[in-house]
Length: 232
Length: 232
Image (cartoon, rainbow over all chains, first blue to last red; front, top):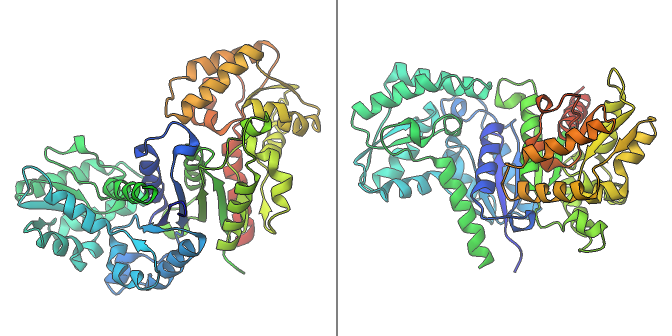
């Protein structure tokens, strides 16, 4: 059997791509180089902005996403991971362009939320306006009977600004994000999802008084599980 | 002109590979995803241990190094970076297997050392036994009239143990490495080279009372300079 190779379709942004790669390495039980997993990364930061495309204000990212997926498949990847929540809007289309599996970070996260004890009736979603508009998380959680609350319009504008600042290497926006998360908890959220990979870079479990279910860590674990299943 | 793609031939080990990727992203002047560089990473940790091969105690890593170099070339990389000092022993052989450029981390580091003011007559090298035995740094620095001092045999055995511990995610070996670096300074070293990428993970400039010239940062800068030159 061919050795499993994990493919990361990244660049959206580069820091979140590195963080996924890092979490895979950190979560792999290994004491020597050779015990680690084979990972291919295509960090293509020129993929057009996903939220802008969803809002009808920018280029379609699908052609470049397809190119990266095919590049990784041709190079030998057996399974793809996409460390960008908003890009999952194009997941059904992308799955038609390659023959290998593409993990679904949103579905994996929804499953993990549904498995929490006690199971939350409502989760608070911090994400790009693109992710919220497409209803990716709302649809995935509806199947589990879980409701999603999102920030009001002025707060959502602040979340988007904060995501831009994190992309510009400014992580000092954490306090503002936590204030908005606090309001979602006041509105009934019993768990928080940092549903944009840039937010995964600045928020951690100890920051909120309820479970924080991080899609990026969930995806890292799903990737490792895929590789371990292939290795038998 | 085709967009420049940097290829990282990594996995030796994965943490050092991530660190090079991270330094490229951190050193790139960018405020949006799209301003970052396109980077392909082949993190193949199954490449056989380089020092073991040089000491005649392990498998030849060249076949797998060649496979990774060709994979990156076929996927579109225009230039390769190898974040493993010891692997540079196979650089001349690897350069014959692909048509794209492969940067030489050792030569870049030697050039940077030769450009220091005041220029050191002697540098202290902390590296794998494989790197020291092959004379990679000694040869590169000899051309600049600079001498290399290395740890005595018991200290070198401790450096090798420390490198293994860093690969096993134990970074608590820093104090021991600094003691050995201190002895090289007593023996005349006017600059220190952490000439194993695992040591780049734990040592930084503020740790030593003389210049520390880090090959991993030097390689990141050389990679960015290559990409910027391509973009014109």
